[in-house]
Image (cartoon, rainbow over all chains, first blue to last red; front, top):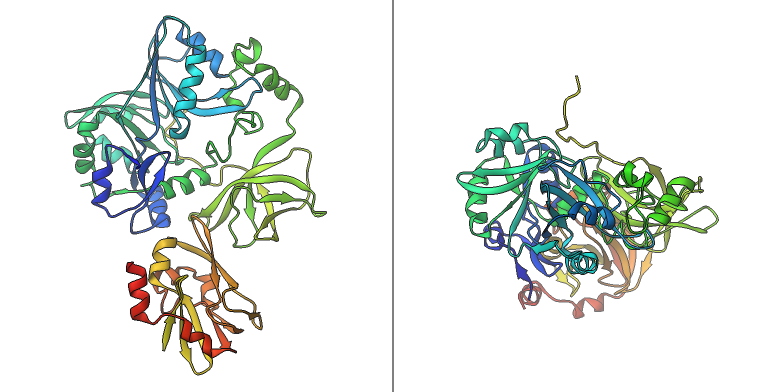
Length: 365
Length: 121
């Protein structure tokens, strides 16, 4: 039996198609369909229930050193209310999970990890957790995303200080008296927010927010096509334990100070790759026809040698064509074909993202 | 006359020609249709063999020939507008027409009443 998120009853009011995802019953789409939800998110704003994701607090003296061992990122100069995207690495430099890391206070950090990886991540943390650090999992804590160009207008109506929150900043806020932890972040490529709040107030707050005509519900299907358009990797598809952040195009997660004085697990492999290059790299593809490429489709050269594999693919409603991501031999530069239903389909490599993000960054004069 | 298969295809009979598409139920299961791989004109397909593929955002689904025959026409409108399947799966969203070579196969397909029961069950 699937677990229910705090928003379960609310979803049912909108007649979704439900699916089991990482042990939770979640909407894959609502009656208007994935494409409509996707387009609405880019034009107006959508609500996504992401309560299935793991929310963890780690606190105590030495927490920065701990995080700098388990991830290739540095957090010393991260101020309270600032967040970074990072990865947990294994001894081979492979990615155990990708996650968002937020500094709450000097000695307390809040992490959001993938739902399917929560148990694995916690076991990994506990293996290295020194005495004096406390790890807490938020059970039943609601988490939702409000994404799209209208997100600021919708949420900002309840808290005018929100307009000063920049991308990857977070703070405590209160909407209609309901306290939340809100960050300006997301997984769609649009401006928007992610909010963590007590499960008791989850539905009342959303019922209020959903009374705004520009806010609609969106499910996991649209969440996937949105993130793919934005070039964002999905753990389990585009990232796994055999892929390093360098191969995945996530070198930015390897901080300068960690390159100069590496403290993180797997630094040997990763620093070598930074120096010498990688054998395979993540790229974007445009299939030339209308057939979608999907995870696992082999990529061949003109002589039918395997030169890579598709890691994820979908239909892009904005570009009105199929898009895909995958890994390709770094040294290869020639025609590429994906094998889909036993037929070789030509495609071309393209830069990621397919759609330029609209994050609310600091304005540079 | 219109008949239905267990795989949620419909076939509308006009003489020895059958017009084939997918049912409203199938379309609801699939979600947004983004592309249909239609068969070649002249293709000879046996009943039950794969004849087309419907790509939705989430997955590709095989369509099977409801009867044995030769493909004589495909719905060109679906190429530019796969959304016709979303809007009108049992009308304008038809996929292809076949000339039936073994019309007795129709006896093994469901009528509307039987199909509706099948979907409910």
